[in-house]
Length: 336
Image (tube, rainbow, N blue to C red; front, side, top):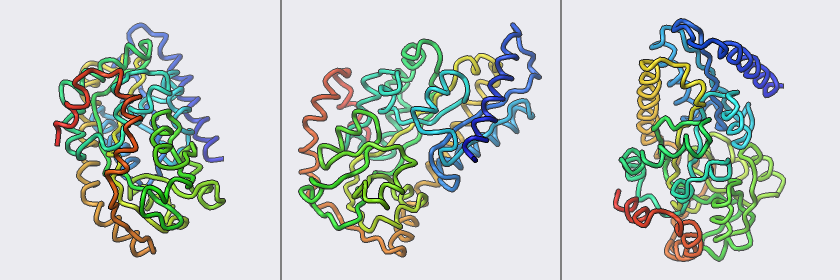
């Protein structure tokens, strides 16, 4: 019922925007409503970051722009919200750039950002994404989306992801027969298949699939394990640190063009402030999340055969790094 109500609200906002779009030059005082979906729970820092962004925009626009954040996957999964962004039903989305190819925006370098053991650190990932090289990739979004979606040139990186299992699994051979959840993009499915039996599922299905035995485990950040209460099913964490995750922020182009130049600048700077807040809070929570999970009975095991995990990805690199710019991998790995 909650999801239906959220979708109805967004639909009504979209209809209002379409009527407003009939005017050639919308007045600067015309009310604008932004809808932003988020798959993570309201308690997650990613959702809180978007709320903070909304508060900044509402304050700095003197109420001309209203921002509504729909957390906990109220508006559907990534495929749903990406299509809604194209149509203008939602205004801004946060998405893993590696998943864009499966959502109709094919930028090989963005896809390759999903390769494991690529970013050397969270800061290294951020430094690359905000570099001129990273910005040049963002420039391609508008073209590859047929002019419907633009990059807001703001990014976040999340702490390295680890493997979570219901039964103890300490080495790569232990994972070979396990059913591990993967994201639904091709590169993420292929990545998990390097190590285990990939089971592609929507984010919202993880908890139930763990409890019913559809999954033996999943992989994510410690905050994901905590905030989604997967620890009620998961008992072990293998500290593989296999992926430093990244997100790009995309906006509907038609809505962007309804903003004045000053408002466009305000939106991007407000988002940057919210992203900076997210990174600072994430750093603070790393130790806190681990302590919380230990208290909940989670056992942490260091990964002692990390080279074997990396070696098993050679075919993955050959597949997804073969059509990127020649200096792409070396440039990323130069950022420590």
